[in-house]
Every structure is written in structure tokens, then in C-alpha cells.
Image (cartoon, rainbow, N blue to C red; front, side, top):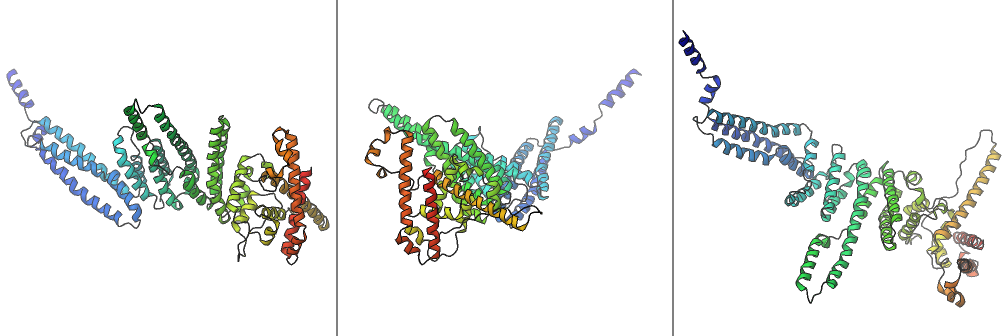
Length: 580
């Protein structure tokens, strides 16, 4: 009985399971057909999607979508290598005679392969449903430079330029913020690795398509980085220029006679490390063309001017703080040039565009920093003097009307009223005419190409106030405003326009004794001499204005006579101020 039970038990365990039966007749090489079948489905899918993109109306952006579809969605390289590996792998598992364990490995490998193949199909469906940013942003991030596999960076740089050139060519259908951040990181990486040409090339692509860009991203994300990049390149330029001195020091330090080979290799190594900088020339692109393009774009937008001046003012304030910390006089002067170069780029563009801005009054009133305006309150502010310098450079040939020109220069009028908010209309007009003229006669022959808004006061008052009292109050306010504007005009001229030839003291203006003893004079004595010379020059102009020759010129023209009287009043006020 015991032998019988043992026989039954052993026969039960010796019965083949369903898995054994399945594996017995299973040939793993059949999985090669799965690989080929997936390829048979995948290739038509890819052709359909690529054809659709090629037929897209957005021909420029279609290149970017092709790159994303190929690299990020379809993963063509991945599918290709998976197929090759799958075909080769399953070739080693041919026939039914191999072990069940090997067959199980083949089944597991096929399941992994199928799951990997499913990923591109899933991405294709997601991409076709319109979720393109999910693939576009990762694709762009993968173009960032590698610190380990540097040999791939050259290919990435070429791909980066193509991708951004295509992407920025059209308005984005989704939020640009994430794309902008990736773009910024690419320029950051380019600058860190010394690829300045690439950084500028990427910036030029953005500049060419700036009208299609999101204003928020331009003002709050791109503009602050432009200042940062500009300062970095400015420093790099000065290091590069310093390199010429280093090269000369190497040549003079190492003897050509005793160490010719060492000297040759040292110079060769030094030049090799600076080769990229030697071929780069566009050092001022970020503070120049890029910054100017941003200024033009933001001025056209309602909220743009606020973004522009908030960011610009912040950078200037930070630069002034850095300037104060520099102790070396030469370095301080160099960095001050960096600040003035920014205004040399900004001011002409701003002056040319401000009149056509949708909210020009609001810009002067709320956005343009009040401490940058040319007022007596800002007499100690260096930036307001920089603004004045740029204004004089820009307006040099615009103060007087050209022949056959009837209308005023709207840009010039807008700028003068904006940066000189408190001056007297007729007196400051008279001053600018004299300032750009070599003599009074010439100033009278020409007509100003601008106008300054006159005195204005608020007409508001109480209901109980009579009309007579209101008129009297307004007259007094007008008189007080007129008086304060005249005082402001005189002070602005004396404090800001000290380089006017009438106020400038030349050696020829001094007597022989004054010229000889100038260095030994005290500050008070020098001021006294300056006052005396200025008064003499102003009185000479006054005499010319009151001369019969000038009166005769103005006799047949009411306009000229009006200007002559304004000239006279201005000069008399300046004389009175100097005499104090």
C-alpha cells in the first residue's frame, strides 16, 4: 500500500505543467517578428506626422517641430538602436531545443522591448493632441552644454541655433516664460564657456523676432539679463585688452637670446587660450542693438515703460553702488564709462521713440525717473548730466528749422518738455537758440524747431468763490509760476550749462597777472574772477542785442523782435544772478 502511494505521488509531480507545455514548443526567435512588426507600424506613423509638419503653413517653425518630433517624440535614434539590438539579441535564441530558462529570458526581454516601443507611440498621441510644450521644453533643455562630454557641445551649439531660429520665428501659442528661461540659460552657458559669438548669435535671433515676443517676458526676464550679460562682456573685453599688455610683458620678461624656444611656446600657449576673444568683436551687442530693440518694443506697450525704467533704474543704482566701492581712480573712471555707454545707447533710441509711444505723458510723469530730469533739484546728480550730454548730442542739428520746413520737430519738442520740466517756455527757448549759435545775429535769422509748453495752473476752487476772486487767485498763481520758472531757468543754465562758451573761462579772458598768479589764488579769489569775466561776457552780448544793427534786423519782423526781447530778458536775469 505504501509503495502504491509513493508511485501515485511521484507520477503526479512528474506531470508537465502548462508552462512546460508552452515553453516546450516555443521558439524565441519569433520575437524578431515583433521588432519588425513594430517598425512596420512606426515608420508610416513617422511619415504621416512629418508630412503634416512639412505641409504646415508655419514653414519657419516647422523645422523646430521636426527636430522635436524626431528627437523627443518619435525618438528615431532610440527606436533604431532598439530594433537593431532586438534583432541581434533574439538571433541567439533560435530553435526549440534551448533551455526553458533561456526562453523565459527571451520573453522578459520582449516585454521590456515592447514597453520601450510603446513610449514613442504614447508620445505621438500626446503630441498630436496639442500638448507640444511637454516635448519642446525638454528638447531645448537637452541642448544645454555638457561639462563632461564636451565633444558633443559643438553639435549642440549648431542644433541650438537652428532650434531657436525656428522657434522664435513665429508667435508662441503657449506661455513663453518656460521657453524664455531655457533660452536665457543657453546664453548664460555660452558666456560661461567663452562662446561669445554663439551668445550674440542667439541674441540676434531673438532681436530679429522681438515684435512677436511676449512683452512680460521681455521686460521682467530678458531685460535684467541683458544688463548682466552686457556687464560681463564689458569686463571680458577689458581683460582681453589687458592681454596685450601681458603679451608685451612676456616678450620683454623672457630673453629671446637665452630662452627662444621657451618664449615661443609661452606666447603660443597664451595666444591659444585667448584665440576665441581675438576673433570676437561684437562686445557691445547686448548694451547696444539688443537693448535698443527692447527699448523700442517696450515703449509701444502699455505696461512696457514701467518695466523698462524699473529694470534700467535698478541696474544704474546698483552700478552706482559698485562705483562708490571702487577706490582706484582709473578703475573708477573705466566703470563710469560703462554706465555712460548704456545711456549713449538708450537715450537716442528713447528720444526718437517717445513721441510715438501710446502713453508718452504718463511715461514722463510716472515712469521716467524724476531724479534723471534736468532740474535744479538734481544739480548734484551725475545721471541727469549724462542725460543732458546725450540730449545735446542728439539735438545738435535739430534746434533750428531747416529751409522749407514748416512743422515743429515733434520728437525734439517731446524730449525738451520731458527732461526740462520746470523751465520757462520763452526764456529757455531763447537760451537754446543762443547756445547753438555763434552770435546773436545768426540766432535771430533762424526759427526754433520746437516749442515749450507755457505756464499752466489748476483752475479748481471752492463753490463759494466768486468769479472775480477766482480770476484774481489764478492770476497770482500764474505770476508765481512764471517767476519760479524764470528762476529755475537761470539756475539750470548756470549749474548745468557751465560749458556754454559765454560761461566758460578761457585763458584769453584773464589778464596777464590773473593768468600768471592763477595757481596761487584762493578758491574765493578764483570765484570772484570767474564772476567778473562771466559778467563782462554777458554784458557784451547784452550790448550786441541792444545795438542798432540788431534792432534794424528785427525791425521788419515781429517774430524776430519778440526773440530779441526774450534774449535781452534772459541775459539781464543771468547778469543779476551772477552779481549776487
